Length: 156
Image 1 (cartoon, rainbow, N blue to C red):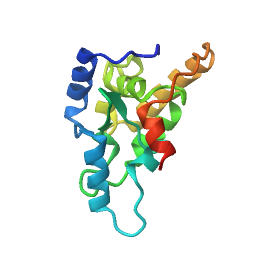
Image 2: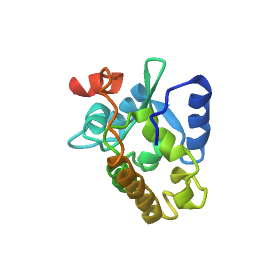
Image 3: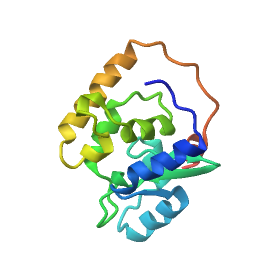
Image 4: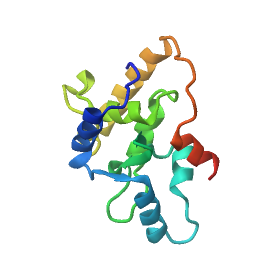
């Protein structure tokens, strides 16, 4: 998958694609919700992003989190989302990861990966593995300047 450049129509498209699976929320709100719901050893959103347990994408200097990565009842991290994310190329930006989840996929018979997470996560994992295998054979793009997500994680 070619890296995707953020745009206004792209942002609106991502919001629409994730709506049925819990929507998206600004990172600062997700961070507060996590703090309110956690008991015992709390883990910050910044640490979850930094460790690759969840991903977010940036739009206009704000981090947005697709909520399908969390269980709605208690905001614990959904294991299925972690497994799929781990199969995608690690060099991808959050925007590119979000776009992959939100784009119809030939390996999923034209369904979007996010829409198949609950019904057929094994197929989504396989689609990610197939893509990652193809990406490993491609030329790695040059490094980019640190993003807000990386800066946030560095201070976690």
